Length: 346
Image (cartoon, helix red, strand yellow):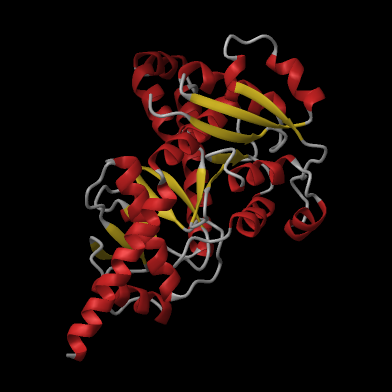
């Protein structure tokens, strides 16, 4: 599997809380003998769901008296819920007792608390939300997906560095292709911020291929797509909606007549394969990159299968030391920029 890692799980977060997070954690422990999990939450709610497990030595419960609700304001959660399962999970990463944490709770509260507790990596202004989008070649890494509605050109450049590090470490791409999302591929397209980011990326040693459009996200010609959080979030929700509509329409059309139902049976393997590739549960788990620690956000309505997939993302990022890789790549880019400046001055 890999070297031992400890994951702190906010067991009370999300729409369904322990009924989802506990079974997912137990399944992850069954399949990975080098994994250790700390379930953070109200012991009375967690213990009955744990039962007697053969891997009890790799699972412990950390009691948390409070729960951050899904509609709670981030600033209230940060100031008033210091004993919440969400806060304690992040504190465990800060204290070195866990290598990563995962929560399906309040997104704003998770981001605000993680940023306050863990702080930013050196050279990174803001954290970004990153996820993997299904594409022809497997998936495309995309960020930001909602953490930052407005970004500077420098921040978009930082997102590109972080996305590159993720693609390198998690997907094994030696030179991941980076694209900047725009309304056209021509150099004259886009607003001033996008244009300035385009220039910064063009001067870098990243494998920057230029502007890409929305349809390029899925085409297999780019591995990392960079955009601001407003555009990224709208794009992500649109993708999820289209995928759901496509699957539902397929089911509806195949069930219209007895003949079509027979055709559906004959095509069952194809339909199931398509459903699995487009199923958002398969790609659950958004990384909050740029923080001095690994934090993964699961969808609030995730079932146990989806939450387990998000947990695997946290395990992989922890094992690969993603924050360290981001810092090293950013420092290398800064050094190259400085060397280039010195060369021009001389």
